[in-house]
Structure formats: structure tokens, C-alpha cells
Amino acid sequence: MSLGVSGLRAVAHPVRLRMLSLLTGTAMSAAELARELELTQANASYHLRTLVAAGLVSAAGQERVRGGMAKRYRYDMDAPLAGSNHAGEQPLLAEALATELLRRARQRRPDRPGATTDAELWVSPEAWEEARDQVAEAARQLHLAARPPRQGGTVHVSATVMLFEMQTEPEA
Picture 1 (cartoon, one colour):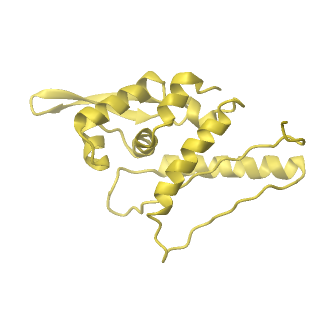
Picture 2 (picture 1 turned 90 degrees about the vertical axis):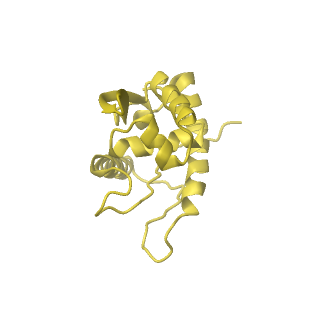
């Protein structure tokens, strides 16, 4: 599955990556996203439209708000970002994720345990496939367990993982 140009443009902005994360836990309106991300509603609406146009976010109903209707949106775990494997997209996606990871790392609670690894390894194909599948399942479980921001009984966490098989010989 491929993100395409509009998808790459959509995830290239850190606000939109944050929106995707928030919309994993709950359907939200532009006004709710604006409040959570400390943006104007117009700015949140603009970024939300970009995500919708890229096919990363879909409508999840409407609700009455002060005599009007507010559309609610949700991130689809099966959207292209979740399964992007197109080689040309990987470096751009990695750059966007790295930028977002730096922002999140500044908010890390040093008193709480986490898990970090960075590795360039040679392993058997079976070990690779098993580890890749386990990480993919753990990511899916976290997405399914996601709740609305600041809901009681939840902790604010960061999860950024990019696993891929490397070329044996680097490109010239």
C-alpha cells in the first residue's frame, strides 16, 4: 500500500501527525482537536481537511453543537500510513516520524520506565519475520487500546517504531 504524494504531504507536518495519534483514541471534531493541540479552530480544520483528502482520516459521525452540526473524524488503522511499504516513501516518512519523536522525547517522564532500541542487525529470516509480526501486533494492540486524551485511568505514551529489511549493499 502506498501513501502517495497527498499522503506524504499530509504526514510531513507535525500537527497532522499529532492529529492522527489523537484520532486513534477517539473520534474528534475540529474544535476538540483545536483545544487539545492549542490551535485555532480554523487551523485545526485546515489540517483535518488535508488528512481527509489524503485518505488517512474518515468521517465518524456528527453531533449537535450549539444549534449546528459538528463533524467528527477518526484515524483508520488500515489507512495507508499504517501499512506504507513503498520504498520511495520510507525516507520521507522516517524524517516526519523522527521530528515528531524529538518533540515527544522532550515530554518523557524520566521517573517512568520505557523501552528503547536502535539496531542494525543480521538475523535469520525466521527471527526477522517473528519480531516484525510481534511489533506489528503490539502496535495494533496499542491503537485498539487508545482512549480519548486526558481520560481518567489512562497514561500518555509515545510509540514510534519503523522496522524494515535493509539492502545488503548500500545504494551508491
